[in-house]
Length: 81
Image 1 (tube, one colour):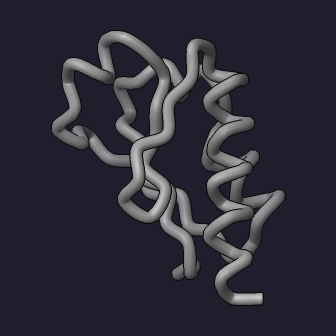
Image 2 (cartoon, one colour; image 1 turned 90 degrees about the vertical axis):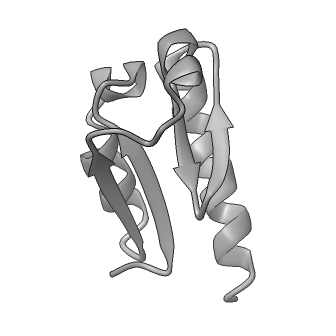
C-alpha cells in the first residue's frame, strides 16, 4: 500500500484516462483505489475529480485534473522527503 492514496469514483469523467496506470507508473509509492462511489455525486456529475489523501482535487477536463492530482501527490510526498 502506498503512503499516498488516490481515491477515484469509477463513474467520474477522470476515468476516461487510465488514471490508475498513469499515476502508479509515475509514482510507485502511490496507491490508486477505484471505488464504486465516493459520495460526491453532485461533483462527480459536474467535473472530473479524485481524492488525494482525502483532499478533493478537481479540474475542468480529465487532463487538467490529472495534472492537479500530480501536483497534490508531490506536495504529499514532500512531507516524507
